[in-house]
Length: 596
Image (tube, rainbow, N blue to C red; front, side):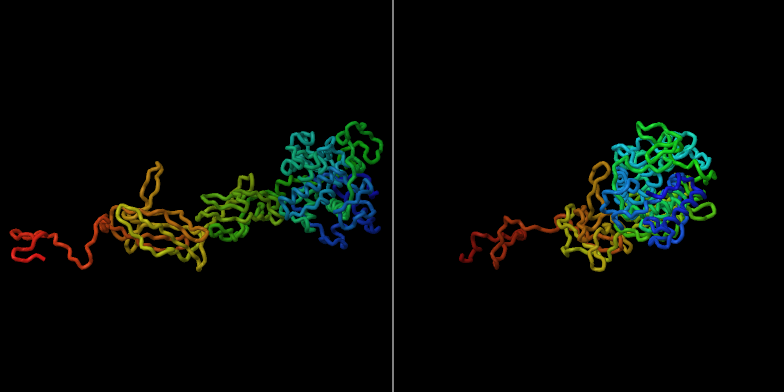
């Protein structure tokens, strides 16, 4: 059996003193599972308790101070292969254990960097509700009746006025911690989850509550494989050094091994009782002492004995501990990137209070604004993150799209009427230091016709293929400072009415994966002459191509029906003889000249 210390205690001197005595006694005995975070024998010990970096999920409600059994679990150093036997006190009810493991898997899928261990959920569930009152849940994981903490009315506990109109805790005047993981309503409103996929977020359902606890513990980019982050996470649940030591002791115990027991057979911690903590059909509460699993009088989260000094009024975790004055740039440098690449610089914001100090757990919304196709990693235009213990938060990697130009990223405290911080970003087109034709054919046509050959060019950068390079094609004048020509060759396009129009400049052209670009067909108007086509890349590379337009009919095409005279035979004269001079006859020789 675990060492029992009476009842679940209020936060305060009594709790700390009793827990300290328990730890000292167990440590002296060499009992397993009693090495705590501040002990020199703990390989994860930090040496001192770190200051909490957020407010308590439970409203700093009281908790059970029972420590793990003195006997070592059957599988030291691992809980991969759980032993199948053991005491009910050291076991975890089947549905409760399944909920913890499912929460671990769900969080790992979306926030692998947190490294949430299910044993931490089990440790918190143990001290918060005795594993949902020994696993007294239905087939869906919902407790048979609500598990409610004491009324937080300032009488020996924190003063937290009602935030849910009694929806979760049945109290429309003050709040009470609710469910197996003991969330106060205001915290559940922010962190509640649907862990079993039934479409509801119920703090009395162990699947929902375990997943919510996992998300809460991972907030602020924590890595729970680090002792300091794990300590901060536990302290965010309840601001008490004794609470941290108690959770740590169970966490270490469960890591060494535990076993599964049937639902409803777990040990109910002493003092758990009240009309809201009874299974269906159980007897009414009685003031007489009761054993494990039997209801007793008093609040469902015991604590009506011991010190009556009130605890400080906590603030829900969605609010900073101090007054937020605004957010500011935390040293972000220039934001520039080439089209299609990621920005090397990450946007960083700092939340500050009215004295200029840092504020943790402030929700910050980052938004990509402006005419751009740039976005955060994953294609998101908006992301919401919380500041860490140092008051800063860094946005995800920003990726440039294909569109060159300038845009803005804004960061603002979520839901607050405070000024935003603006970050100007610039996307430049893909570079190319050379662009040239892929062949050397002369480009010639007759006025009023189209060029037979298609113009093809290739862009390179340092002799390597330059894919996705933006190219502009313009028919230009032959001036010292060329401008767009208003006559000569042109491209065809359609206007808003679908009518074909002549254009002499094309934009938004891009080279392909092999760096090449084929221009649309080029047409000639009725003006003959030699013209110039200029192609310019976004990186500044340029090529000028000559286009020649000949006058209509200037090129004589031979008549295929005519038969040329034999070589060496003079062609008969087609010029008529001068007036008065008879034309030579083709049938007779001149008079006096013998015929051949």
